[in-house]
Image (cartoon, rainbow, N blue to C red; front, side):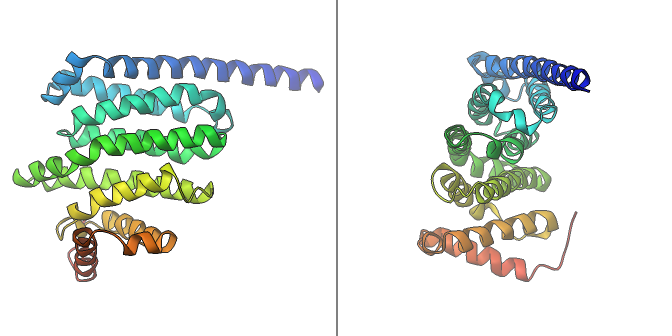
Length: 256
């Protein structure tokens, strides 16, 4: 029995070492591309090959992450942190492509959901800080991306922008509650995301049930956990939030 257990432990350790090598390869490829200014410029300019490659790299990183057990997250932190830093550069170039933005937010959200609470407190704080950095880069460009989609009558593209951001924010707030991190970079990330997303949620987007549910979950969380700060939001933002709530209560046309 002891020999069998020892054998299983060796296999498990070897498997985790192998997966770690795959993580390093996938994360390294993503980081290398995001350090290439020429490639980022092509991506920003809408180059199809660059966008396809970016999606492939993001999917590879998500696949490697899902293959790793949460208990091994602490050892993988040095691989995740550069990947999150790369996402900050990537989201800046990808803002004109809703599919890419959604893929970036999915990767960030899954990191928050699966691994952040498994890490030591110092690593958790760093990871939340990197998520905040991604949102800080995206924030000034988000409205422009959604406005461009709306101007082109591409409601689906606007939906992907906003729904992807809401998914990420909901995962951050869920894990912040689990980890009892009510202050610091986690709350700053959610508040920044709230400031970005509230002005973008209009009657057309509230007609999508999943988006509407995520939006109201976000608002409920902020009011419940941070009542004083929520009440002190800038007048314009507070007005937009109230208007969206009023509109949402009157929506009768539902979409998937």
